[in-house]
Length: 155
Image (cartoon, rainbow, N blue to C red):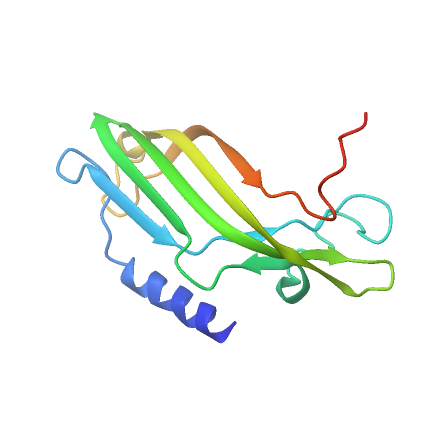
């Protein structure tokens, strides 16, 4: 966990001087770390209310200790950019049981692909320091079947 904290601080410090995507800087490449939490919330015990165990990274968050996220964005015209992202992870933690024990599972591979269109609102703000945007996108996620995710969905 210490390594991830140091890497996060390094990424924040390195991104301090980044510039926005525009005609002069049409490409944006992002590399990072992917984290997946499959612990359900907002249901009956043992899950608890929404955000009950959200920050319990030790028991619930699956973090691959390497660069596991890549995105590529391209400015295509005046205020519009398109982008694609891919991520992977290895699911080893599945939440808790009623006895409050962390549930470990066999390693399940997780893959995600996303696409997005972003529209810059920089002209509305008229600032040289920030450039807000709105985006619309979608994605698809695959995860191997295992002990806890192989039952058919019943309505």
